[in-house]
Image (tube, rainbow, N blue to C red):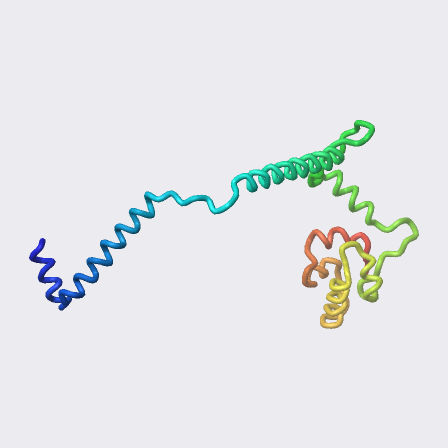
Length: 173
């Protein structure tokens, strides 16, 4: 091993003075790192001061937790003791779908909207049709001519089966 090390040093052409300098640096690094590991540094802060700060932090944290619990308690029950229903998404049943579609049908004596003649404002009266959809419907009408069936509304970008089913009873050609 010594021989291989000697030949390696010889190949690198390391001078004797360079070897001594590297050895001294390596030994001093070992001595200083071992001294640092054994030395326990003193705290450069007042331990009592930080203990007081920790107590103050805990007290304020406890106050915040209590306030949050009080706020949550207000929303968990009504004053009369009646529980408020949790906010959960509604389950869709066939009965609710039928009820929703009948609600959107025109009342007796109310006119259905003619999609071939209606302007933007009239089209916006339909549920789920805002300014953008109204504009798209009019653009489609200008490019392709009048609608020949209600199902052609699907060709308007953004109007799908569901939206068509909602507005179908409210429109006419």
